[in-house]
Length: 358
Image 1 (tube, rainbow, N blue to C red):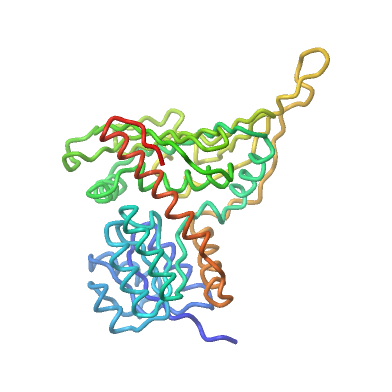
Image 2 (image 1 turned 135 degrees about the vertical axis):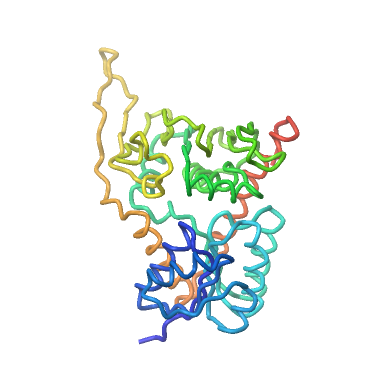
């Protein structure tokens, strides 16, 4: 049996915790250290994992001390480029939570460094590993072209969730942080090139840095005529009406994710509900001779929801496979950079008051 991949875990928030749980559980990995700026958060995570893992407050010191085979980076986006490039230069593979970086330029630097070092970089696009979402993509591709893709995820956050959101918004708006997930899905659905992006935004709290917005919406147009919009808002002021919209319309009908607890009132800030899917509702547009619908709508059962921690475990199984089987991740990295271009263009559009051509 191959030796386990020695991995250094960075970050202990929602995502960092879930990834660390996966590494702790999977026999293909061995955690060699936990890195966070907060002593309390890493100690809490270490205790949850059973204790005994070395703890560090500085990433670069941890990288030098542990000499890992790979790093898992779930820290704030403004650290992603610095940490990932340092890891690649040290000969490590890297798993990086989305967004890949805080800017398109940084994302391109990471992609270039991965290519030059021959190391693997996997980005945390969790929806790519969700059975219901992969089925959602497949059903959308049956609807003909062009597609109209409508998606949002608004979070009525308070307490620790609002604290986390405020920390993220020191450097990154919701439309950038979360938007990369959904524009990635749109790109997979259309298989077409994005050509034009526009965006709007609003600052709904004085607790944010000047110039930062906690609500935004982007609209993207693709070369095949498909269009999509994505909306994201964070904070105690957000409404929970229609906060979980995930559907696609095409000439042949539509397909919608029917959410379970994820769409129930009070759950908009629940990370487990953000990926949830109870079923897919498929609508057929074909009409019969009488002018009425020739087929009834269908509820398509999906594989049982793995849950947030289960999805993170699937991501790490893929990361291990990419390393051990030397998978070509060129398209994977290109997709991540492309998603960054779209959300960055939306932010630019809002700030400059114009549509951005890609």
